[in-house]
Image (cartoon, rainbow, N blue to C red):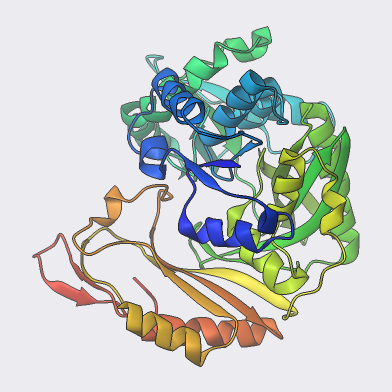
Length: 432
């Protein structure tokens, strides 16, 4: 199996799955080649083909678990070799924010009001009420997505997006040339944005797969923000929502995935749930599994969601992943973040991390930045914060997980040189 952007963490997760134990995994291009700077799609495809053609053995599957452009490159490469994979056009329908909203509106009311915004217009307009979100037609990891409260904020966000939209917009446009776009979608070029009403409430997500046209939602998870900030604090499994709400989430997910025509693929559908109005709103649809959830399934269910992806890649029924049991009742991936830029001058040592993991059962820590790196130069960060550490935690309850997280943050010592004055700062528990 060739894995686009394979890293050691996911290699270990893949190798521990029932199917993965009988597979050999090979990296198909590194993550720097796939997500750093502006990607040339044709050059990247040529580089991937050279690796596959030069392999002295059979290429039995090509898979990927990361965002753009990997989600789009895998279907192209698989189609060329006759390997099982989702259809490229179906994946594009999910990835194209305006096209996806257009399709969602045909089968459900669980979406915000939305409109196209032409960034090249003399005076860009959106026609919606504030607050709203302004996003490129295609982005990744919330890159260039801004919450807008008023006209001034809208103009500022539009200007920021206009300056940087080509990094993803141009390669995405080259992929769009490979599919037939309906007229409504063809009008949305890379210098168009999606404006949509701001959803609010409790964040949650459905994860599932489609096998031979049968849509299966096997999990509902919660995503919890930092208080007063749209950056994730943790992804948690299983969901704490009432079963009736979870059933509604599953039903909407099945309908929208079927409408997008997605098949032979894993997926996740992100929602906001308004408890007071008992109302659901779709944030976005991802035609891939969420690797942020992988270790959580392993801790609670006994097998990572990577298992479903591997089954699909080998044209086998992913239902074989059902019936396992993990060690913990709850699990979450927690984020330790900093909310302003800075130059990293110290990160926790390997010994410090290993000591924490030994002290706390069900805890695994991954440090994100490196010494000498500027936080704003890290890959795949949102518009409001920078990841310092990702902390996987299993526990008997949410309270136990919270206690383990606070102990980890207290024990993980980072130092930075701030832009103001160049002085060093040691991060405290809040990670500010």
